[in-house]
Length: 279
Image (cartoon, rainbow, N blue to C red; front, side, top):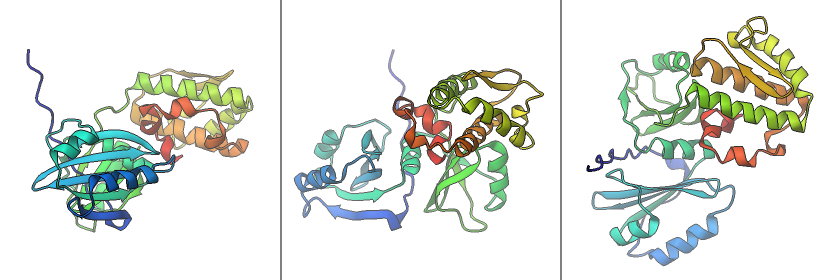
């Protein structure tokens, strides 16, 4: 049985004001120098996209917080950097620095099918909020990244602009979401058991905006650091509710995400999908 052909890659537009350099020819900027320059830039704060272009052929490589997520060719195949260098020996190079959330979404949406939207901007904004949309919104050369119906990076379309959206293929299912948050809350509770009491207070405060948090509905609870979820709800309802309750609880407790022992959870794709990158 033959494998299905890969989905052609989508080369999302990037904010040009964040370009480190653009269209540098390897005829004058050899690959050896380009690689040395890249190696000197990579640190835990480095998030960027490297584009290679040579007479209609291209490849794109994405780093998020110093980690190379990978590379993809125009045909949709994942490709190592050394392979792309050999295939495009006379490429023009463009390096664009991005915030981590935008860089992560650029990578996750590399093979996502674009969906044309009927509503123009800004009428589309309310629709995306209602959908708790996560992914990329593109209008011409402008691109923004969204999590649970909120813009977390990039530029917005001009009024009247026609838009397309792209959503990652690895969007959360309810079971994965609950399992991830159960582990996250358990780690946080062990670091500060006061989370239980504060969480209960916060859920009462947020119940009007997030009905699944209503303590009288008994749909979401936290007891002894263990998250319980019951009832008929969707990811679109639960994800923003948990994120709102968690971020407000941390503020009440005077805790910062960076101070908690969450390094293993941060490496999971679910970290971004849960909306924590913008927390």
